[in-house]
Length: 592
Image 1 (tube, rainbow, N blue to C red):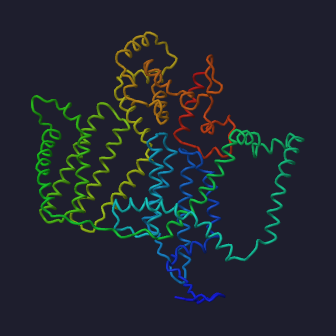
Image 2 (cartoon, rainbow, N blue to C red):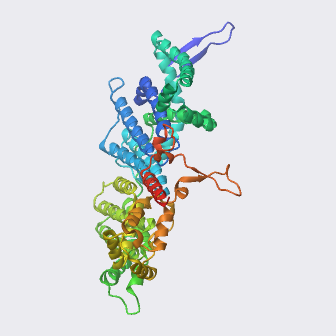
Image 3 (cartoon, helix red, strand yellow):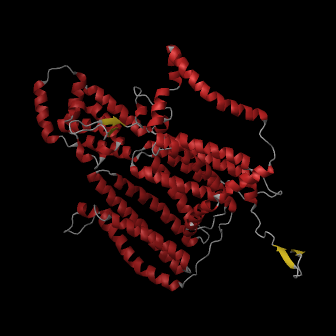
């Protein structure tokens, strides 16, 4: 401790000023981040521009996937840069592991799934899932998480994002330190070039407009490169947005990247996992004995009545088999969490391990029973998104139960990390599968199977002799259609009109059968291909009591070569919307 004795000009006693040293040592990561400020601010500016270019006002386009790819690349690049620049010869504890890269890759793939669907469920959970996976992958770069469980990871995620608020002063502090540490001034040549650009840009714009007005060929060449009229109209029609919202979001995303890295570099999140107090084994044994007796009885009934089909005389098998799948799903979930809870909070012996194993095996019987009942229900009432989701979840639950079964016998097994990996794999495949289109394919295939043989015969006859005189045959066939052709509407789930994913399947059905379908089914298909319904928005400013006015949604105008588009519109490209728009236009031209 340094002490300085000072005296004043009066006769008072001297006093002591004590200099308190800075006992809080700065983390090496923070020093490295400050040293990399010239690299970071350029990268952050680029990141802000990438957000405006790819992801601004874009929830379901290909641009959101590209922005996720840029985000993953920048985060890995920064981590590699920080790791490769040690402070005082000490390398930083940053681990670019295969696991981190995997979760970054999954987040990117999920984000690209936005341009493969128009389902609101996926558009919401793709963004939520991508955000969580980016957070988890970034934390894995700086922290050792091998022993973390669900509760620990949840608290770490909340603490991490709260820390991004705490480190808001860090970019300004690093900038100040960088300015003080570097006494170099901007080179005269660079400064002169910047001044020249700022002065010459207005002159270039004015002279280009004048030359375009003087020469029509030159004007056409310039307009083919950049549509000034469309840009001017877009800028002034969104003046408030362009003057306030765009700059604010640009600044926000520039700072966001720096704040995330600064929060990670603080390294003050505790990696320690507190193990809970273990309770007596008899409590858990008593619980599992009671439920296992019931589960074994229930499983035996499933084998006898459901899988083999031996039913009491007063019961109908079809009615029995097509009920109870949701209840079984919930019981299976309860068993999964019960096994995890007992593994963590109770001491284990051989008896408890056997009882928990019986619970897991009976849970597999319940999962199989639920899936079997659901599939029988689908066989009668066809697919909907909810039914597909239940089957998908049951398949994933099988893997979850395998993890809980392993945890019974393997003490150091981290069930959370295993389940996180399984969930990531399952959801990534689910998000990229275009589920609505698969549902449409299955349901339409079931409709085709239900068509009577005469429909196929009639379709083949039309292909062989389309100009033949068959009036009497047509009359007989039309009467047959009225009583024998099933309704396509029955095979389509509620709300199918709102999904653009059915376009390809319905158009192929109509192209294959054509007039072999009855009038009602043809109307169901043609009504679906409505441009106004799918791609036009109601214009309240132009509407009146006499006429309704609709305008083409500007985000879908990119699919039409006859409509002028901004150069920034490509980021909204969505494959499902593109297929639907193309087929709607084709159907519209056929009807005309």
